[in-house]
Every structure is written in structure tokens, then in C-alpha cells.
Amino acid sequence: MAIGEGKVVCVTGANGYIASWIVKFLLLRGYTVKATVRDPNDPKKVEHLVKLEGAKERLKLMKADLLQEGSFDSAIEDCEGVFHTASPCINNSKSELIDPAVNGTLNVLKSCAKSSCVRRVVLTSSMAAVQCKRGPKTNETLVDEAWFSDPQFCTQAKLWYNLSKTLGEEAAWKFAKENNIDLVSINPATAIGPLLQPILNESVEVVLNLINGGKTFPNYCRGWVNVKDVANAHIQAFEISSANGRYCVVESVEHYSEVIKILRKSFPSLQLPERCADDKPPMPKHQVSKERAKSLGIEFIPLDVCLKETLESLKEKKFLNF
Ligand code: NAP
Image 1 (tube, helix red, strand yellow):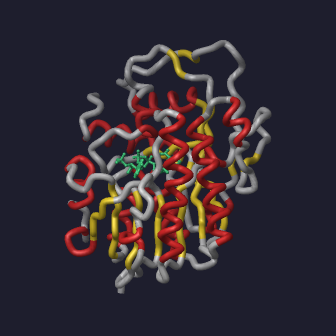
Image 2 (image 1 turned 120 degrees about the vertical axis):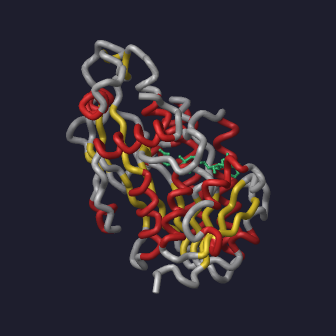
């Protein structure tokens, strides 16, 4: 018998990049999935979900908006698990980010608190809520789940997405504690790899932007992870009963110069930026602990494979021609 057979779970923002993979893997594991989207009548948002294996029998699309109180009640009421993934992404304004991330998350958790069925909530947080604080990171710095981003620093640096994820996660832990909700958070780095949805999302765009003819690459180190590992981490965090707290989900931290090298090796015909955007010493490459992610059984897909899969998917979806 499939592990999810007879079990009902909810995924919020189900049409998104990460959530679509969560929905796909849940359906393959036999779960019945109540998938919330803002507009179930928009084919660009739902067609790729409806086509997934098992969707005809076990996918239920539901309309819900983070900013409407009670919007998630009917999607969540009979669910054993809730994967709260919906949240606006980086390129939104401050006001568009904070309210849905904080009050939207509380809205979802309030619906969970009303239900007598919900056993665990898995929150999609981010490394943006972990590592964003004052002071330089060196090659020796090891970031782990005990790190919390500093809202004051995020505000001063005008890092509104980081602030939204930090405040959203903080609010979630507080509400979960006060209302006896079993909450686990997944904190991924920049997720790349194949797209299921037809729309380009922001983290994959980070890779596409390197290939669109720019002359320079940023002097910056970024954490990277495959979207399939992120989706699996969510499901493991629900299924493993002893899972708890936060999980950093990061395959590697690499400077853009290294990413360019890998891309050049895999795709020699690509036009890639040749030099760094400044003459300063390269930003040091900190480390992120993999110990807790490995306890969820995640065996990370290496960055070169992540990049290869991303480019092949961008080509297949016609965002890239090479
Ligand atoms: P995405 O493809 O842009 O998906 C975002 C989802 O959130 C969409 O379904 C979007 O719905 C929904 N959403 C936004 N505002 C909403 C609102 N007011 N009401 C209801 N739904 C709303 O982004 P993603 O990369 O998959 O991100 C999903 C989650 O992962 C987010 O919580 C993000 O912070 C987190 N995360 C992402 C990465 C990454 O590198 N991709 C890394 C770490 C954490 P519409 O399509 O209707 O706008």
C-alpha cells in the first residue's frame, strides 16, 4: 500500500515552483491533495497540476488567498498535514511582501488550529530567515539551524524579502507554541532544477539572468539546492514523526564565478559573463550544516546536475535557445 493512501493533505500556493513538486511527489505517494491557488480558472496556474499522475483521482483544486481571513478553512478542515508554501517572492514591494508572509501565515495557522484533523504543519521558510545578520561570514563560518536572521538588520539593509520570511517564520513559531500546533520549518537556499509550471519563477530566473548576454557576474556567494530535494525534505518532514524544528536545506554555497565555470564545462557553446562586477576580493564562501537535512534522508543532488537540469528545462520550456 502506498504510504499516503487514504490520507488527505493541503498544499498552499500549489501552482508555485516548489509547491508543484511537493504536489507531484505527494500524488505519487498516494496522498489526496487539496491544492490551494488564488485563481483555479487560470490555465497557466493549474494545467500543469491537473496533468500530474494521480491528479484525476486525488487532486482537489481550491481557491484561497493569504490576505482573506478564513480563506483556508475549507481547504484545511479535514487534512492530516498542511504544507504552507504560498508567499510572495523577492521582486515585490515591502508592503506586498510583509503582510502575506506574516498575516497570511497566521491565517493559514488559524485554519489549522480550528481543525481537529491537522497532525503537523510544514512551513516553507527560507535561508533568508536564517543567515541574514550583521557581520561578515568567513570561509570558516558554519551556518546552522540555531541561526536566526536579525529583523533590524534586514530593515536597515532594506532586504524586504528576507524581512518577510524572518517575521513570517517568527510569527509561525509563536502561534504554533501558543496553540499547540506541531510545526516544522524547511529553510531552503536558492532552489533550481526543472520547472513543472509554465511560468518562469524568480529563483530559476537567477540562472537565466547569467545567460542573457550580461558582461559581468556578481561578486557574491549564494546557497543552492535542487527543487526536488526541497520538495522531498517537506514530505519527509511530515512523514518522519520525530522530525521537529527547523531544517536548512542547502546543497552547497558557491560563488558566481564557480557557477559560471560549471556552466561553461557543461555547455561550452553558451555566452557567459567573463569577469566579476567589481575588483574587490571574492566574497568568502561560508558553509551551511547539512546534518539535520541528512537526518530527513536527503542525499543532495550536486550543483552541476542542478544547473544542467535547470538549463535543459529552460530550453524545453523555450525560455532559452541553445
Ligand atoms: P513561486 O513559484 O513564485 O510561488 C509562490 C506561490 O505563492 C504562488 O503560488 C503564489 O500564487 C503564492 N502567493 C503569493 N502571494 C499570495 C497570496 N497573497 N495569496 C495566496 N497565494 C499567494 O515561488 P517559489 O519559489 O515556489 O516559492 C514558494 C515558497 O518557497 C515561498 O514561501 C518562498 O519564500 C519559499 N522559498 C523559495 C526559494 C526559492 O529559491 N525558490 C528558496 C527558499 C524559500 P500566485 O501564482 O497566484 O501569485
